[in-house]
Length: 425
Image (cartoon, rainbow, N blue to C red; front, side):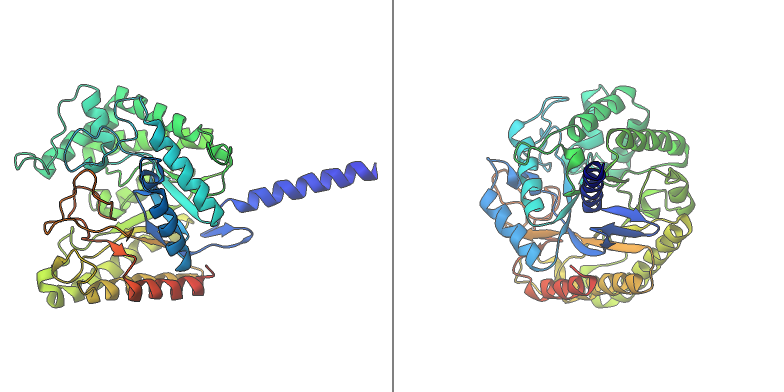
């Protein structure tokens, strides 16, 4: 009897230890290994591409080591791109045609997670994309008979309004949603070829993210959007009880500029934590050619945007992560040699806000800058990416280097290290 009790206690202790390895939510905090988990992380969208045998594994290992050195242990990563038939989009695609996968890139995701696990890093994996640069929702629409993607990067006739109206169809496109559901089941059901762990059993994965920046688009589309979002969240929850779920929303800016819409669309209790993104240049707060004049408003607007979303998170009783924020260098220079004074001032606002939130037990528990580009570099003055060029933090639709933090940006990276040390990373 005593032996049986001992074995039961041992089994329980092992089970408890394994459970503690996964990032969990406790009130408005993240918990990992039984301790508070707060972080300054990075966006590293191209990690799985480097991890493929056809990618650049030596570079990947060097960059993971570099990030680890600065306490950057939480990475937000794209599972994979779709289509890949257009310029200004990610190549190579994980899903070149609907339901058909590039095995080398699947192995690349396996390899990335395996190496992150060795370094005790965690990953937030987004399963699709609202935007054109990796295919995502627009590619599912094209695959299912909704006409060619009106990619704004390819023709002036393809305005962003036209593109967004096109993508808004996704939430009501049954074959599109079914195809994404099959993709989600396929990815979450995968077993890592290197660790032999099921993805659902791998504590390296912190969270599954529905999409990169899913948008409501219009008030009329809110019902269809919310129905799709809830069903997708419920699906992920049914497939994986170990990992957290988040949506990838920008916040108010992804909800028709209305915070109440953001809150309504995130009412599902299976959404474990909230997200927001902040892009001052894209939102016309900041102009790099008038940096000194526009920087005060940029900082003020940023602080206000953070505050209103943190207040919403507190009211909803959930943690929140600022999982994208970025700013160009002086005069939008693309090289690491260009000064980054305004960027560093911008980043400091996020660092200090996160530090204060932890000290005051607030719901803001993580930030991910956009993004880490390590050894990447623009190969021409315009920053145009072409197949064979090294990846940077800027996807192919952006000038390479525009928002990238390079490995040589030592002043900024040392600042990140200081804050991560203060957070316990």
